[in-house]
Image 1 (cartoon, rainbow, N blue to C red):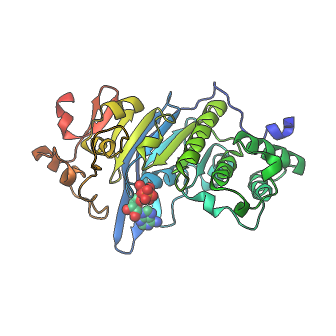
Image 2 (cartoon, protein in one colour; image 1 turned 120 degrees about the horizontal axis):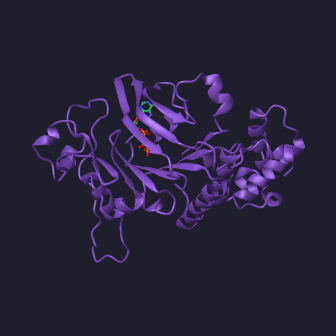
Image 3 (cartoon, rainbow, N blue to C red; image 1 turned 90 degrees about the vertical axis):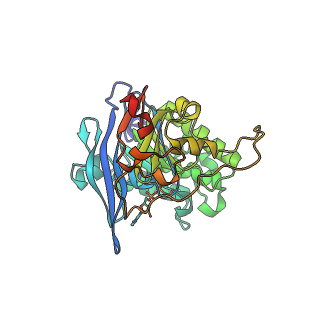
Length: 337
Ligand SMILES: Nc1ncnc2c1ncn2[C@@H]1O[C@H](COP(=O)(O)OP(=O)(O)OP(=O)(O)O)[C@@H](O)[C@H]1O
């Protein structure tokens, strides 16, 4: 890659301030039948944390949180409160123009859920990648474009000579997902939000894509926020997890503790629902009942109706309680307060 083309991609610099602080983010959608509160006061920090997983069942608000952080919510959605501090700046509180010019794709990027199926069928891989580059870097030369594209494809384990001139339908699912990741990393972001990055891939390819993400995080010294409903995917990818339930972060834990000693009854149930091949247990464990309707949230613990440990206190909103280094939103730990 030429020196000039190198300068279009942010280079990893271990000295830069990579602290990320998400404070009390709430997200709501306006719908015909009322306001739906998808995310309720979620906070987390990533100082020494390189990767964080956002885990929860469908509808728990994971994607809304990711879209909210990238300022890409659907038109009827908005971040109603909270801040997202990155490089000492609340990037939810700057103009759209400044965010687009300095942050979107350049410092924060996203692999959207299902995006491998939205690659444009009438453009070659090279043309799609060129389009991204030229729309963000108006003055970039064709030579630099090609050089960056080839390097980005190599980074994700693809041979540029074989894939540059190919159309999406000529590629396997795994290759398409690698291209989607290469697209997201094209401008050298410091934070990558990956929403269900391995859904719709078979297990072997899933493992390869996860391994690729791990390699890219290390090589590029970037931070990753992985959104997934599948807890079993993340142990080698992230060091902390946020367990989301009905729009709230009910547990924030390091990855080891969450598997060895999950605190929240919902997290415990999630872990128990992961099938173990060597276990003598023949029946599949599942969580009975349904999550509450996010348009009709009342007082009290949102998991109460499904919780085997529910008791009187649960009728009141549970506080966030620190247990060791981990936070849990559950009255069972009130004596730790
Ligand atoms: N544009 C929208 N308008 C109205 N409601 C929405 C919109 N987008 C999401 N929701 C609702 O917000 C809640 C959270 O959805 P979200 O997609 O963030 O959850 P999720 O945990 O990512 O689920 P999934 O894994 O199925 O994507 C759900 O009740 C969903 O129906």
